[in-house]
Every structure is written in structure tokens, then in C-alpha cells.
Image 1 (tube, chains in turn green, cyan):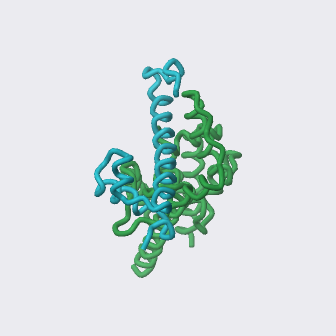
Image 2 (cartoon, one colour):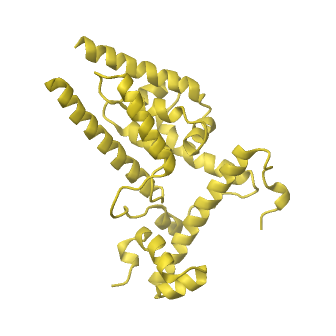
Image 3 (cartoon, chains in turn cyan, green):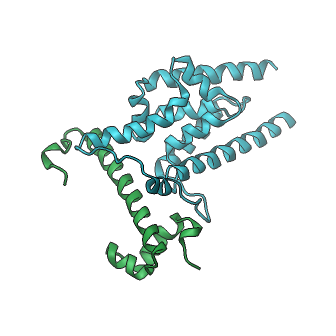
Length: 178
Length: 74
């Protein structure tokens, strides 16, 4: 009972850290409300390290995800004959924005993600909420910047879903054994 | 000016919608930069709003929060 309570508290801390991390990444990217791509970056920052391991399981470099986001935007612009502007010192000023005041803001896709993450976590009752859960749920989304970033990196998102599930499964097995 | 013949075909919504998102992001960035510079140069929010073709309230609500505090005059 006490263990369940402690785990719930820890999961809430993980969610808080995830949301704050995603907002920080979004603001640094010049966006007020985080999208799924910013939650991937936040999951890669989590101390459990399972999000990174999920990428590494399929031979992908988790540190390349940030650059992948930039490249998918550049590719999309190239598709309509626009070369992405070269960064200047003034443009760098426009990159980062101040955090939003008031209630936490996110894009609609993030709300669907949070719901799916809660459902996914229920299936792993008894184990902590992990970065691998986050990656598993986000990689299951077919459309959007996160999905296009994975494609730009040459990552098969279905393989990433499986890798993240395996990573979470191993941690769950250890948690239940302990 | 974008050559309309180079626009993605609406038959390929994935590519077309990716372009829309990237354009919107680029436009937002340009808008933020231009508004920050305008405010720093002493433009009023009314002037900014007129230049953008929106109401002063709309411009302030949407953009004031995205500016750094040193861009906003006392």
C-alpha cells in the first residue's frame, strides 16, 4: 500500500518534470505551447534513461533528435522551394521566448498523448512511469512534427514503439521482482 | 514569392501539411522578431497592430507574452 502510494507520488513528479521540460524545450524553440517533439526531448532528459535506451536499441542516436526536428522543418520548406533562412544574431534573439504565464498550455495533440500515456501506464501497474512509456506512446502517433522527425532520422516508428515497450518491460520485471 | 507550381500537391496531404506547419513557424518567428524590434524602436502597440492588420488587444494578447522583458518599455 505504502509502496503504491510512493510510486504514485514519484509518477506525479515524473509528469511534472516531463511537462516542465517540454515547456522549456518549446520556449527555447520559440514556441509557447509544447508539442509532442518537445515531450520526446523532455523524455530523453529524464534520469531513468529508458527513453535514450529505446532509441539506442534500434541503433538510433537520441542526441540527433533535436537536429532532426530542425531538418524536418527545412525539408518541408524545401518542398515548396524555400531555403530555410540562415540563422543570424538577430534571429537567434527570436529563437527563445519567455515562459507563458498562467495555466499550462499545450497543443491539442498533447492532450491526446497525456490520455494515452495514462492508459499505457495503467497497463504497467506496479512499475514506475518511464521515459520509455513516453517514447512508446509518442512514436505511435502517425502524424505531426514528432512523427516526421523520426522519419527524417530514418527511424521506423513501429520499431521504436516495440523497442520502448521492451525497455519498459524490463524495468517492470525488475520492479516486480524487487 | 513562392512559385505556385512548386507547391506540394494537395493529393499528398502529409507533405502539404508539413509545409503549412513549417511556414507558420517561420512566419511566427519573423513576426516575433519584427515586433520586438518595433517595440524596442519605440513603436506603440497601436502602430504594431495597425501594421499587422489586427486589433491592438489582439496584437498585445498574442505577442506581448513572447517578448523578452528587456524588449518591453517601462
